[in-house]
Length: 343
Image 1 (tube, rainbow, N blue to C red):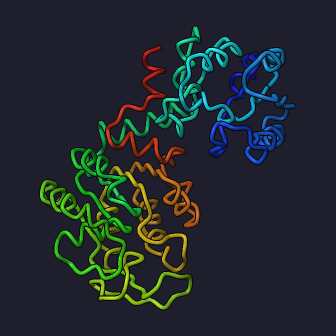
Image 2 (image 1 turned 30 degrees about the vertical axis):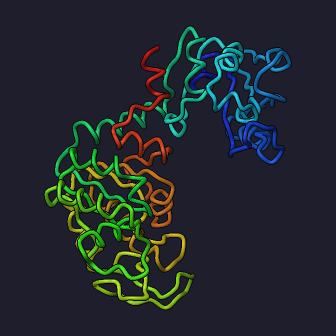
Image 3 (image 1 turned 90 degrees about the vertical axis):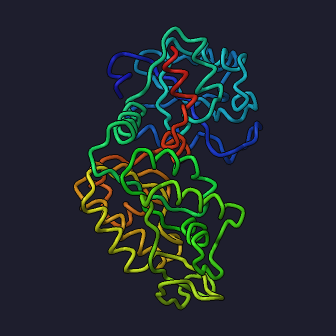
């Protein structure tokens, strides 16, 4: 809207799914063009491809919108091929990257293209993402806490190590908690444990000086299926698996959340996609919303949780980039952001 209101012709570029470098009609952006028209209140021209003379001939006039076909129909996009990037750059005079969700990938449309553009800028969403993530990681109001969930410790090792330097408390739930609990010698039954990461979990706990809080009770089942009979246990009995945090843990976590001034949350507290094992995650979502803290939520399941709890409007910022926000929280420089900064 901003670009159109200021008299620009707009060329939109994006990807959809993983077509593996070949055209796939099921992953065409044609439905996106149709959806964009009512949202923008004007026609959206659909290009047959994303590069080439036919596309160049469709250059939009001021006030017009052209949507390019799926960038990933070309293998050169994900290879950050300079020639492909140059062809993309030939379609416009100015480049704006508003895809924070792809900022952790060095692709032709997020990296290589910038070398061929006279001017490059971050879009309004990219700006908001970076503002919030920078604020909570560089100068957070205290107490600052992070809540991490999800299945794998291995996905979040760097995040845990980096956040431990920043936050005052680190609350860990989800299946990754069982790898930590096992490292303390606690019984974990049939719960998902990364055995090759138990030693690492032990050293993380030792080096974090009591900052890490783990679940003190669990919702346990014999088999994981919707509507499976469950019980609450302080430790996971043999033959059972933990699928959510229990009521004592919810209460303990909620107490820490209530006193926080900054909250970073990434990952669910249990098997969120199988009710009633979403209760812990939803309870945490409500606690975060009621805390009055500056809150940044990232990751698909945490976003779903705040939406299903009906509290999305009380979260300061919901990140659109799961992988990108995780890498940012791990202290990694995002290629898509670095390319803009260099320009």
